[in-house]
Image 1 (cartoon, rainbow, N blue to C red):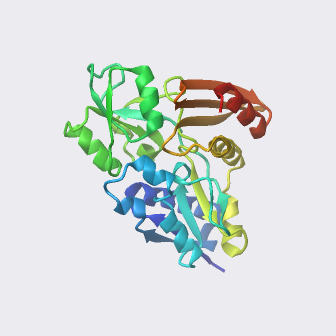
Image 2 (cartoon, rainbow, N blue to C red):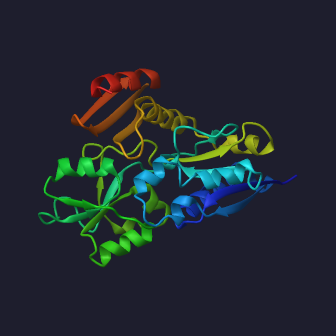
Image 3 (cartoon, one colour):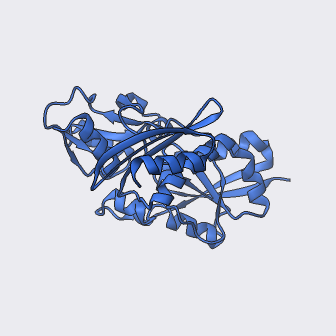
Length: 288
């Protein structure tokens, strides 16, 4: 018997690419026993062309409409970029699957960091990226950059900004890695919590939940939950300059973390035996 799984997703090219990748994972796991249908949703964040992206993300503007389709029965699951998902979830929904993570890094397009002229304008709406860019190149200017990935690349091409900061994962999923001038590794820029991770939300029981659990990657889940724990326990939102990346180091968890607030920029690297341990030590080191 074929099971139909309806995946709710935003209509943006990147969101659709992410939903299709989830569909491919389901087909690889279940073969022709699963039929995937995309339910495309116009989110509040996509319709709002004026508010800063960071503020929209913090209030959940990119996910609430998609979650509503799941809650009212139009879909069986919702597909999100984890970094867009607020730490508080609606009652009845759980992160049922974390497919394997893509590259978590940030990238600059239009120029390398060192290749930018003094005072050049870099497009980004992320306080985290702004704060770390200012450490790399204090002379650079930054400005809000709205629109989908293609639009942002076009703004660099047209010279509206000299360069732009984007997530490598999004560029990979859209086959646009040729636009990357430089990938910014952990020493240059700590990524956002959950960057590069897709999360699939669903109700915890029922036929769809059983089907979706097959594509959960346990390592991605553990590391993503560690990053989200730091985000939740510090009360930081997208408008806060907080970065966190958890990785496996031997038999331990390594957590790189960055924050910039009224006390100035700080970063740390912690290695420990559990998510709770590394998050607790990171908070102590960062004074959070």
